[in-house]
Image 1 (cartoon, one colour):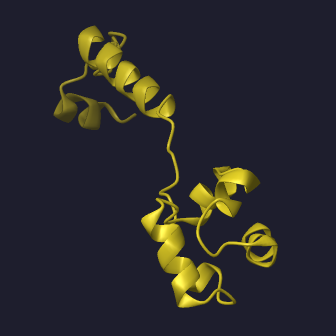
Image 2 (cartoon, one colour):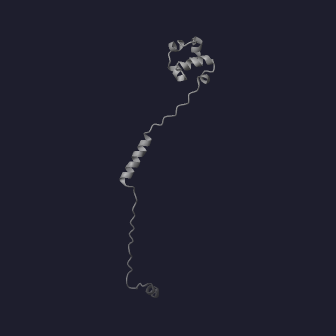
Image 3 (tube, helix red, strand yellow):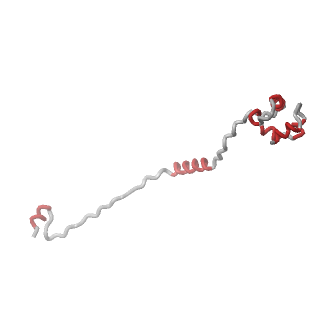
Length: 111
């Protein structure tokens, strides 16, 4: 019936048409094993890094203990107690042994 069309297309009526199979190969690019291992090692190192917070800047004793007079702050600083942490580590006996530091001043330092 459509023999003229089949002849035009180069297909003969009597012969079955063979279908060609098309094979498509796909490849997935993956990084070399060494790079992957290095990347994993780097990630593990970063994950195991402990991030410590930056220490807060120390305030001058005059700001930490506003009730203290300047002469007491001078005595404490000259004795090596330049921070609240140093004062907290010191014993009461050490602080009371400083010139001019009495029980009232010690109470302020311990508050």
